[in-house]
Length: 169
Image (tube, rainbow, N blue to C red; front, side):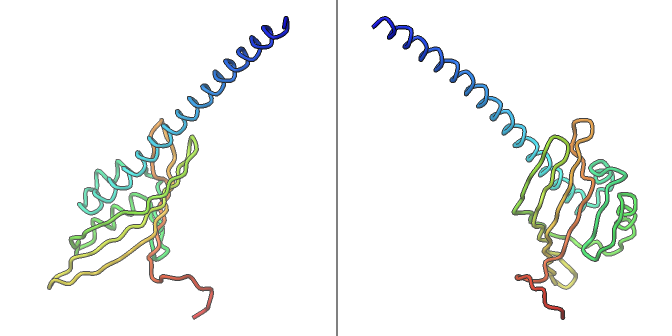
C-alpha cells in the first residue's frame, strides 16, 4: 500500500512528460507541414505566373521570375538561358493565342531546393480556326535564394505516346 502512491505519482509524471514530448513532436511536425505547404504553394504559383507572363509575352515579368543563370531545356533538346529565351520570344513573329492547362502538380523539397513536376497542356489557336494541341511533361528545379524560390532549371518533354517502349524504330 505504501508503494501505491509513489507508483501512481511516477505514472502520472511519466505520462505528463510523454505528452509534452509528444506535443513538441506534433508542433514540430505541424511547422514542417506548414512550411512544406507554403513552399509548395509558392513554387506552384511561380510556375503559373511564369506561364501567364510567357503567354502574354510579358518579358519583364519573365525576367523577374527567372534568374540570369536559369536554364531551360526545350523539348527539342536545345538549352537556353534567360537572356536567350527572351530573345527567342522577341524574335518570334507569329505569336498565336493559346489556352493552357497546368495539372498533376508534384512537389518535393528540402530547405534549399524544390522540384516540381507538372503536366502542361497547350492549345494554340491558329489562323482559319485551326487549333493545335501540344501536351508536355515538365520538371522545374528551384533554389531558395535569399529566402525566395527561383527556378534554376526547367526541362520539358513533349508527350508523343501514351506508353513507353524500349523498341528502336
